[in-house]
Length: 249
Image (cartoon, rainbow, N blue to C red; front, side, top):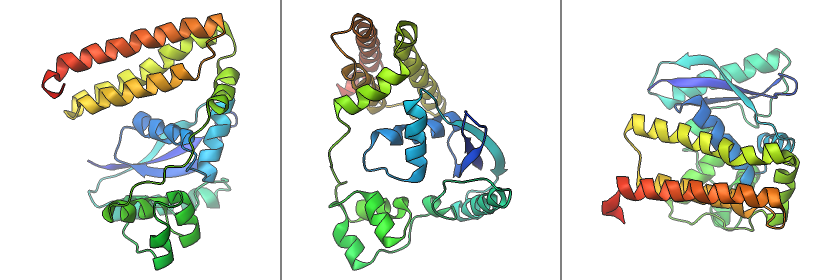
């Protein structure tokens, strides 16, 4: 499967803010980027920018700029670096911390101090101190069997701030379950097409719906109505999951 070089644009200005490479469908890669905003261990400039967009009810725009017909991630990484350099020469204010490509082949070693920090602090903090890509840190942490740092998650109040800003009107609030469900349906279609759909995917989507639902204000009539919609969608997912994978129950 070829690699795609892509850009993330600011929907407010159209400015290119990030360049990356992926083998995933672009809408799914964007979904992964947006999921990073819910992890307090993610502190890169890119994630902070995505959080700012989400706080204003916006999402980055993803666009393909080139296709790299290779199975070698190093070659794709080299092309990613060239595109990063190209856009910087064009005056783009990119949020890429490194030259690019490191996330495609994370095999650089860590110092003893870096190894001692694995699992004690977030991978992003180890990467910052070691001047490595976070994917490199994650690779060595998994290779050594060290659990991920489990720091405090975003509080309910913190999530509430985002959702209240994004879905403060009744009409937009009632669209929240629909918007989340559309993204889930897109991912489900891709997994079915690739033949990799598993019960764990349904469990993950149910957890995601629960997370959105739990962030709602139960004392507000509009939020309560949206919560009922979330419960119906969760039940729908669980019924379909048990029908497709009864042997795993």
